[in-house]
Figure 1 (cartoon, helix red, strand yellow):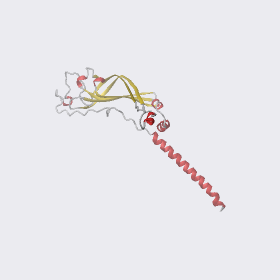
Figure 2 (cartoon, one colour; figure 1 turned 180 degrees about the horizontal axis):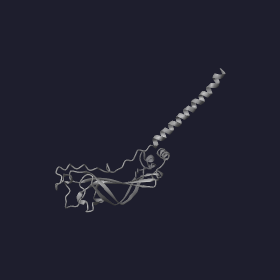
Figure 3 (tube, helix red, strand yellow; figure 1 turned 90 degrees about the vertical axis):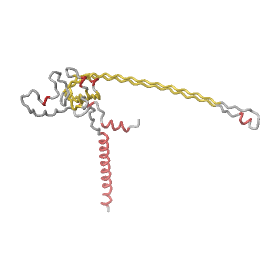
Figure 4 (cartoon, one colour; figure 1 turned 45 degrees about the vertical axis):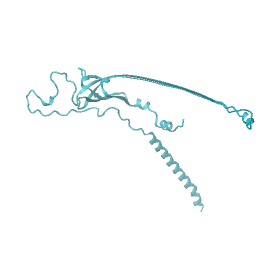
Length: 238
């Protein structure tokens, strides 16, 4: 009897410890789930490059006409016009935006009510004060200012040719500096008529242009808020 009574507290302590450990694990799993961040996908058009299709076989060896070079004039600049060709994008983006707004409203009202002191209810109504007045005023304002500048040069690849002859281009440049990997990506639609003689085109002449500059590495991780801090930031009521 003594052994059974002495064993119950130990069993309760073990059960309590198991519950505490289970609660701690559940809390860690919850924190881990809250700290999970989805992978950031690039905003540029994919894929970043394209391999040109193989040329058709030359059925007339030694002839002047070669089917593999069809569409490339002999007396014109070799401008990009096929999948796999490359051209240079001169990034020259300079965008400024400003916005301001203001609003003012005002409203005033007054009401008066008077009665004569004579009559059956004259004494009662003569002591009542039925005058009222009110006013409402509102003033608000706001403003925003944004400025973006991006300059650089990037060579891209023609990934698709649209039915009207426009070129879908995409490309990226990667730079590994110490422990940080930096990416410059670009994609858009180019009109072949805007391509200069040196196979370059301004980014301002590219339709649906998407420019991305991002980095990976210890520097990027140092600039990111910690998962525990993000957790308390999401649940904090203030």
